[in-house]
Image (cartoon, rainbow, N blue to C red; front, top):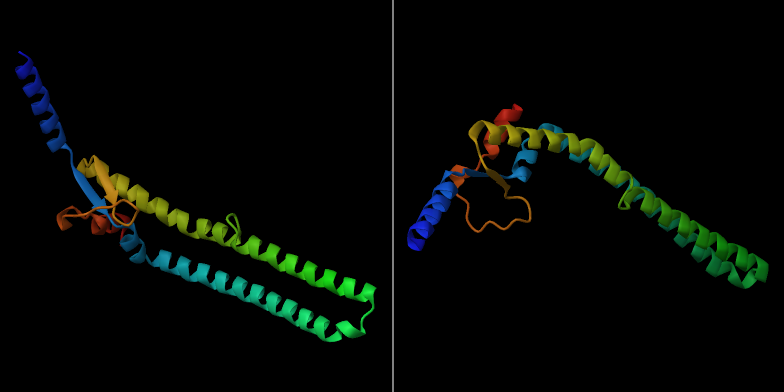
Length: 168
């Protein structure tokens, strides 16, 4: 009796697992095929380079202030030295704050990336969900994520189908 129940349970589990459909997509591949994403990346890089240049110029100015201070230090009074040192420290803090404003974890670059890329990622997710619903996939993996896939059957790659659904 126990063998029959165990055999029935094993048969049910194996039938259930075979009835599930799996597929995978490569969102990096999909993103690279979308012109809006390429344009967004170019725009983000433009902002990043512009802000980086601004910060580098600020640090160059601080370096020049410090060199001038060092060369004139002998001629300055104690009060003038303190004032110059405070000015250099304040300029450094200002540049560091600017760097945090642009490149910090919630900085302008992060906000710009979210603004430009999130709508594209949402469209991809919608297309993947539509693909899953239309083809009754139980699970769709993303090979571009940290998930380690030791083997993938190219027949299960639905990246191009997602692009078709999106109109690319």
